[in-house]
Length: 391
Ligand SMILES: Cc1cc2nc3c(=O)[nH]c(=O)nc-3n(C[C@H](O)[C@H](O)[C@H](O)COP(=O)(O)OP(=O)(O)OC[C@H]3O[C@@H](n4cnc5c(N)ncnc54)[C@H](O)[C@@H]3O)c2cc1C
Image (cartoon, rainbow, N blue to C red; front, side):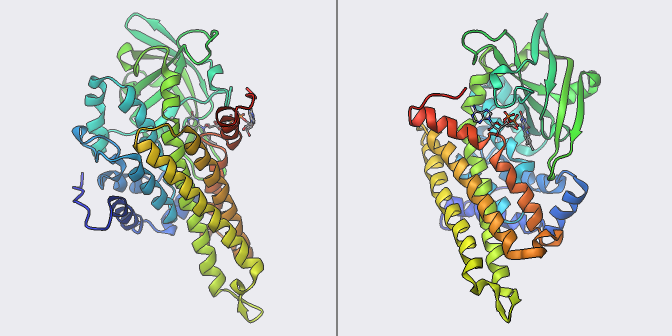
């Protein structure tokens, strides 16, 4: 791993932003466009990010990582998207790792984290969503104890990057759903290298083609045997560990959307200045200017909410409301900025060589996954405003 030298710029966060920008500059729009055309994973980009140490910034130094807080991780994700890239290819490593960091045993951490930090091991996938959709406590994938192993059986409707990872987190029911629907689910850290070598038929993967370049899949667990030692934390408590990671996930996702939002605003402003119609730049017209400005202002406002959320997070204070609001506001703002950019480009917005239509498709996801904006609203409604729950 490349040595990350002491910051020689104003602040640590600026230092990481600069590093990320410099790395992203090596991966042009053409790089991302070509992958989008053929729906291929950005392996070279993820490997470069890993080799630079940037993807390991959240891993404590004692396990070989950067030992930084989420503020740095959020800035890195934001810069990747602001450069025109797509951080969704690797963001899960930052937020799913929290389960291992916070709830894994010391032995598990020593076994896996140093390898993740160097890039020898990839932890890019989590397998939670089923037909139950947003109602996670109604998952039916089962893990049954058999001697020293658990046997996992079930179907996951979405598991991204399973072919691009060595380690996989799987949530399964180890007890039937009871009065407390949040218990009875267990989180397993599955070593797919072993699975591929010894029981390849136990996991069936079917790629799902989506409207953008995203390596996602349906997965069938067909009697997958995993040792008891692969449980993270306590059996039956897995859903709590997943929830525990939600604030970090929301903050990182908000940051990606903020990066996109700025990319669209800057791209639109540049084009509006240079494109001449009726003998003058289209940016002279307020009908063109104002939507770009509206998008920009809302992205900036979302950024401020994200900054509050991430500061609270790094201070170890409650930040559920702020993290959720940041994710919602950022997803809406990036989408607004995307539409303004698309309109500014007119017909050329539909032409792939400008990257606008690609980023437009990419940024739409932040409204939906990994959590839907409606579900964010239900959180604010019940937890902040004391309104009745809709589920
Ligand atoms: C590209 C992509 C990659 C993904 N990768 C992964 C992955 O790697 N691992 C994984 O586990 N999952 C993954 N997911 C799944 C993702 O987390 C879910 O799509 C998301 O949680 C929403 O669930 P759903 O799509 O089943 O929507 P549903 O739960 O079917 O909801 C449909 C609609 O109804 C609304 N709705 C439902 N209930 C309520 C309510 N009570 N109040 C208001 N509105 C409600 C929702 O907000 C939504 O608009 C991925 C999804 C996508 C699109």
